[in-house]
Amino acid sequence: MVRAKYQAVLDLGEKLNIQNGDVSEANGVLTVKGTAATQYEKNLIWDEIKASGGESPSDIVADITVADSSVFARHTVKSGETLGAIAKQYYGSAGKYNAIFKANTDILKNPDVIHPDQELIIPNL
Image (cartoon, rainbow, N blue to C red; front, top):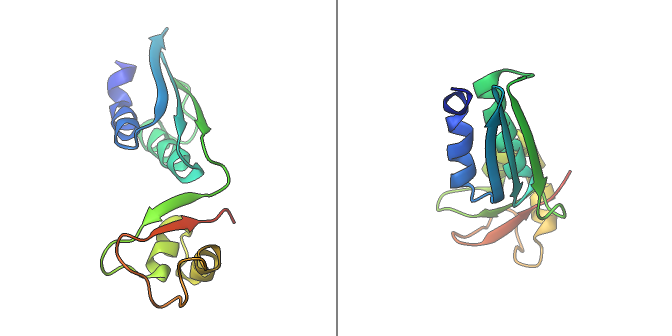
């Protein structure tokens, strides 16, 4: 029953390709383990846990590690995106676009010019 409650978490884990995943259930508590690629993906998992179980759920234990803690995320640019929109997605503020620009000066020469399929580093702030 608790597994069904957190099915959206398990589905997101599959979508994000969480590595070394393991899910077990005992005594009404779901235990979820795995490795997210970045801190951003780990945060997405936790957001989904809270959406399903509330702010401090007692029926799930999650041990999610991060494979690459040197960056917050990696982002592949899609057509029509701007650094401001990308900053808003990851940091909640478009004004933090300059942090992304500075982390990618090896491939970006102007913060107003990005191209589809470029892979950007989203730095830890």
